Length: 107
Image (cartoon, rainbow, N blue to C red; front, top):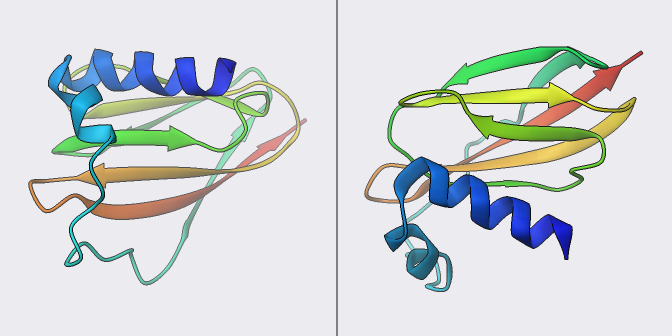
């Protein structure tokens, strides 16, 4: 339950209420995942900023490992909460191009 609320709140903070309606629509068939998954390493209690122009939607797999916040226009802040790994998905642009990140939180 907290996972869905967190995603909805971050999405709302990034692009406003229209994004919530967008979440219920399936992604267009032409939207492709990035070919490679990028890795972001952050220390427990630390932060890492990602500049992602055109963010439309974001999702974090395990919010107990890492949290995400909007940190300004086109900037996403990843906060390490506990040691472990989780996946971060980011959709950008009008085509909803999806990128995936492996987030590693170390002690």
